[in-house]
Image (cartoon, rainbow, N blue to C red; front, side, top):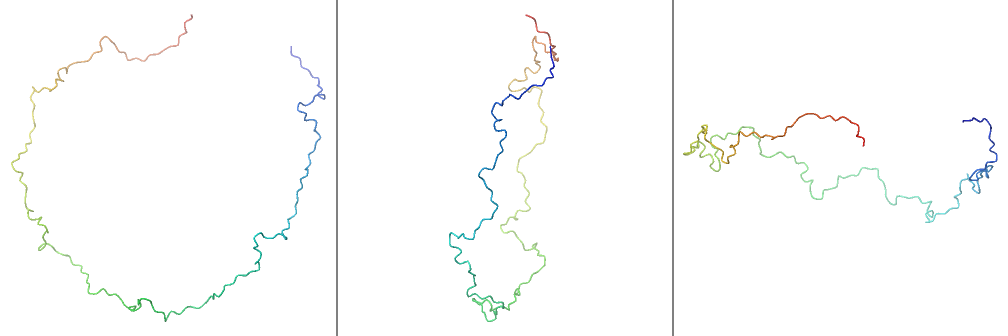
Amino acid sequence: NVRIVDDRIDYSSVRSRVGSKENAHHSPNGGNVRIFNDKPDYSSVQSKVGSKDKIAHVPGGGNVRILDEKPNFASVQSKVGSKDNIRHVPNGGNVRILSERLTFKENARSKIGSLDNATHTPGGGNVVIFNEKLEFEQTAQSKVGSLDLIDHVPGGGDIVIFDEKLTFKETASPKI
């Protein structure tokens, strides 16, 4: 029951819902805003702090003179007399450095007498140390009696344990 229509529909009487067609021919203007491209004139502006009062001031050096001569220190003397021995060359006195090996075998002894008993060998007294293997008899028993049931084998009773992988198949649910 489908029918294809090839007629044109007239939409000229349709109005917009918001009323936006009322200003359809509106062209926006700039309003009262004007953009200037002129540079501002700051010639009549004065400083607030009065910093332009001495604008023509050129700083001078005062009474300071800059000399380009090397100063002469020939007549200057040190304050503490450190120039009295200025030509002194240290020699080292009567010190001689020897490179001989020293021998201490004949006259050297310990200060506290620790080498008096250097040849002493400890005896050990009357203590005898045996190095024999100990043998225990067959009649030795445990103190607590824990070996009384040594031949006991634990059983599971009537329970049989199987070690198999179980597979579950989907079955249809029973109808009620």
